[in-house]
Image 1 (cartoon, rainbow, N blue to C red):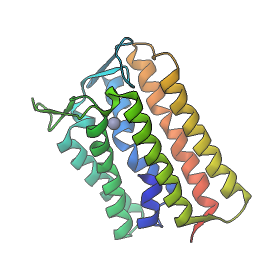
Image 2: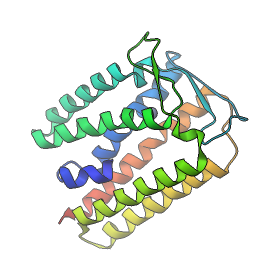
Image 3: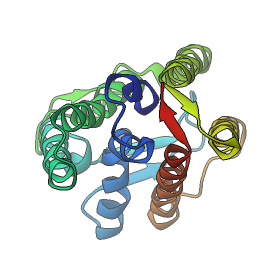
Image 4: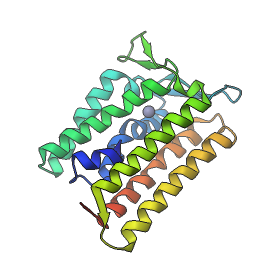
Amino acid sequence: MALCAKKAAPKPSLGTLFMAAQWLDLLWPVFLLAGWEQVRVIPERSGVAPFDFIDYPFSHSLLMAVVWSLVFVILYRKFRPYGRGSVWTGAVVLSHWALDAITHRPDLPLYPGSKTLVGLGLWNSLPATLVTEGALFVIGIAIYLRATRPVDRTGRYSFWGLMVFLAGIYAANILGPPPPDDPVVIAGAGLAIWLLIFWGYWIDRHRAAR
Ligand SMILES: [Zn+2]
């Protein structure tokens, strides 16, 4: 979604758009460490993700996703008075919840305390997940390449380096063993997403809008 948004709103950095796309998952490890949200790992669970998201109302309920999206828009406008960019970054934040609602089992609450849990469970099927997520990834790359061009060699290699890295992490997630059932380890891996955001800012400095 971050790669796609670069076409609709060229000015926000790819790093900012990555931050928007992962905003809910960047808050989640903080709330895990604070003990406000809970997760456990069920290694024998079939499908793609071995996680059981027991409770995550503050990072992943629909109402809070809307609130976090607005927070992101307000913060963006504080630093960049660019209306189109702020609207698109807000939309990218919300797209995370929509895509989680397609992939997760029914575990996403509508609001904190809600008993209604949403999730279509795409991750229950490994083949359907690989086809859908693989197609979205390729479409995102295609749209981004049409929207931007490298201004130097770093602009080309930093981008393709990240795409290969993302594909590698994806393969390791699917083929590798499940993570330990320890919220601190899971939160640590979640916070490592910040690396991708800095990588996005680096790429963006070496590419220009077409
Ligand atoms: Zn999420």
